Length: 351
Picture 1 (cartoon, helix red, strand yellow):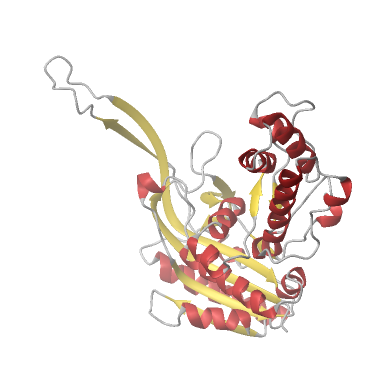
Picture 2 (picture 1 turned 45 degrees about the horizontal axis):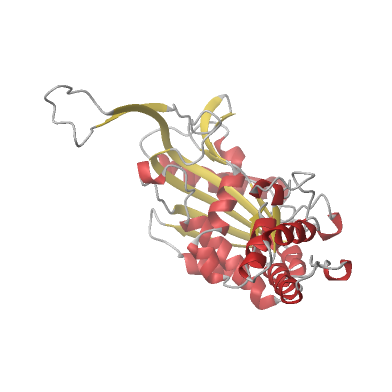
């Protein structure tokens, strides 16, 4: 098996605000002395793992990331006839196995049932929690210590296997991520623009006040983004307990999601759904490397996509010339010229 799978994508987004900073502006980065739009890896990974593409392809093998596991447990206990006071006390006891609780005492609010750190639960762990909850409810007594070992080293959660898990309270159950995802950046320099907008009050007849019912401002940008993803296929197989069928499904789902799923930010305002115009897939045992250096000097001109594809391939060939082959197999999909296909890319990725 070739250990590493590397994906290089070029995706063009129209005016959008896919990933906002704390002020609501599109995220940016300074690259090669020029301002670029940026979409964080966290935003991309969440969009992929919660997408219909990913969830449907991996039905039954996707986990849940939450702080509110205690609320889920308490609600299920109450629905099964346990008194609220007992339900909350027992739920806190179970939830504490996954992380430190936010409050030292139960103040009657849902926050008192939250753990401090987001925890990613596999389907097996969620099933174990539900089974224990039903057992506790049936006998109407608190869980005992022997029943609280609910975390699993081996599980079938493809999203945990790909993107990892860190549990500060139980580090032995941490999972090293098999997929590394770079922040996507535009291949050219950009300027973040402002959109001033107004909204009309439908019940305002205009007889006394002809002004707008609301005024606001939002910021946006557009551009062609380069994205790099590297997957350690051997580690992914190990994380999935050696299940080759699930391994292939996980890789195929991730490849399809990277090419077809857009971040969710401000989609209702901009409808900025896009698909990759170019995708290069490489597999091999060689040390992985990004090709972001191809865009250190911003691309410019009317043939932005074609120039960017050419630059990407020229950089790859020059890297191969000085370092030797950086991959053993490669496959391309070019929607600009109509060459290749997503299915061919997936076939290469799981080969």
